[in-house]
Length: 252
Image 1 (cartoon, helix red, strand yellow):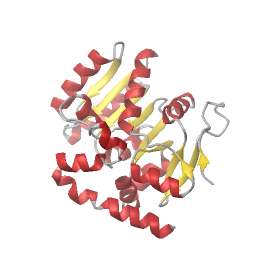
Image 2 (cartoon, one colour):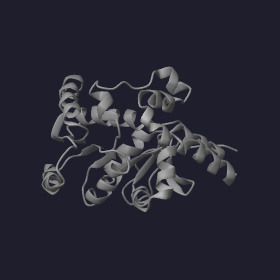
Image 3 (cartoon, helix red, strand yellow):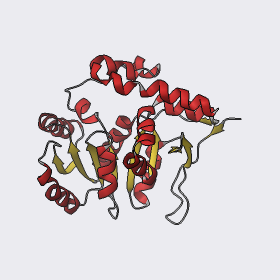
């Protein structure tokens, strides 16, 4: 019988979180009907790291000790990809796909309404410039306490990280690519009260320099095909998709 994951709501910092946690090919993932509510609950609990899990990242986590550790230690891992949702369904869980780009946008809008301090880290200088301008225009009241592109000299990063921590953000969105954004957050966020989330290519989309897949492709769960057409160089990474499906089927 399928399990309908509907438990949400903050029950106090000393109580277990409202979401369930299961595993897909040994990688943890949360089972919840509302990832936005879960993220807000995590913030109330003192903050932590949010990871958006898809099939490609699941396979990468199994092959990389560093990425696997970052996901294992994350506080909330949401089912971003259709493959992960399918794998959860085979375990009896009914959950919706929760694209990280949509959760991050919800958090930005909530941040503006509740005077959260927001930090943006990553992407190219051009993308960051366009992103800051568009977010300020589209989300009135958004307090950008820190915003810096990711194309920095390695020796600059310690100082950048210190400035970021001194800004005491309530929400940190990092677009540094997988696995760098996950391992970077894993290293920096402990002891910090905010939500820290890797957002991949979301900055490119929000800046207007790239387009997200049409909604009909999202409904049919083939956004991966749109990304492949837009970026043919991704084809090697896409080989993880059939490998993921085969691994799930072999586990029964």
